[in-house]
Structure formats: C-alpha cells, structure tokens
Image 1 (cartoon, rainbow, N blue to C red):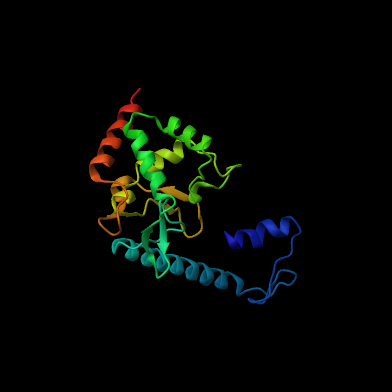
Image 2 (spheres, rainbow, N blue to C red):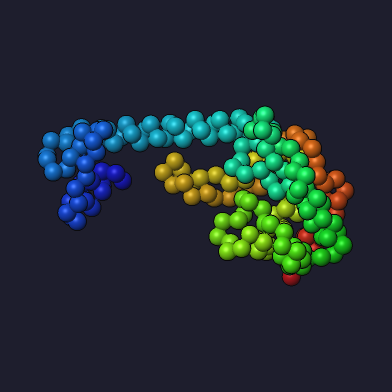
Amino acid sequence: MFMYYVEEIFPNNDILFIALNDDVDTRYEDNEMMPFKSIMNEYYARDTSKKIRSVKKTTALSGGFCGSFAPYGYRVDPNNKRKLLIDPETAPIVKRIFEMSKQGNSVHQIARTLCEEKILIPLETSTGFRFPTDWVGKNVKMILENQVYLGHMVSHKTQTKSFKNRKLVAVPKEDWIVVKNTHEAIIDEETFELVQKFISVKKRP
C-alpha cells in the first residue's frame, strides 16, 4: 500500500515524498532501497502489534485490568494499575441502577431519572456527548449487563481489525476472557441474574 502511494498516487498528483530518516526523496530517482525499507517497516509494525496483543492477552488471562478507563463504579488502584478498587462516589449509583431495574424500570426510564438528577455519565462513554449528564438507555444497559460488578474481570470484548486498521470490532461473547473474583463486587449474584432476566424479557418483540 505504501509503495502504491509513492509510485502511483503521489506522482500522478504532483506530490513530493521526503523521508529524512530513511534518506528518501522522490525528486530524485535513486530510491532503489525504498521498497525494501517499506517491507522492513511493515514487518516491524506487524511484529510490535503481535507483541502488544500478546502482553494484553497474558494480562487478561491473569485477571489483570488492561482497559483505558476503569468501569463505572470502580477506580484503578494507584499502587497497581492492573487492579480495580471500588469508587465510593459512583459505586452507589451502580447499585441504584440495578435496584431500579429490579423494580421494573426500563433502561430508558432509568436513564431519564439519572439525567434529571444531573448524574455524570461514565467517562468511557462520554465521547460525542454534548452534556456530561446525557444518560441514554445504552449507557444503562452496558452497566446492567457487565459482569465486572460481580467482581469478575471481563476482557477481550473488542479488538482492532489488524495492525494496519485500528478500528475496533466486537469479539463474540464466547471468546471473551472472564476471570472470576479478581476484585470486590458491587452487585450480588442473585440481583445480577434477576436483572438479566428482566432485560431479556424486555428484548422480546
């Protein structure tokens, strides 16, 4: 792909390509080493990507946290970035969300209540929202279905398409990595299972 741009796209559009570190300058014709350097760079990027994935998978299998943001209701342990601690400010909100669901409220009703009370939305879902208190049903549903609140570490829910394409794609649920009892639970098993039944019933047409 890189050589296609250098040999076809750039010349056809009168674009010069200069890479100082690799001593490449398309104004001149003595760039015979460029295809080999391109192959080596791609190999290096592919190898680095594999190593990063391997480290993340090893961390996940050992029950370590490897996300960018701690799940809502938790915070990252300042002494161990792979461990989760309960957040005293947001954990009670998580409990309340589950309690409202147990009482028969839909995810949209719960979201509306949280909006009215000006509760801040989860940090990991805040991108693209105009206001930090704009709860939607999707936010609530993600919390209600997350096993992390049982004290289990759930990883490998998404992955990039390839080392070239960084777009995240969903991983089938059966391929998720789940390690039980890695941190303190916020919700008990009975409440969680009951809420899952409520959600599944509301999904039916």
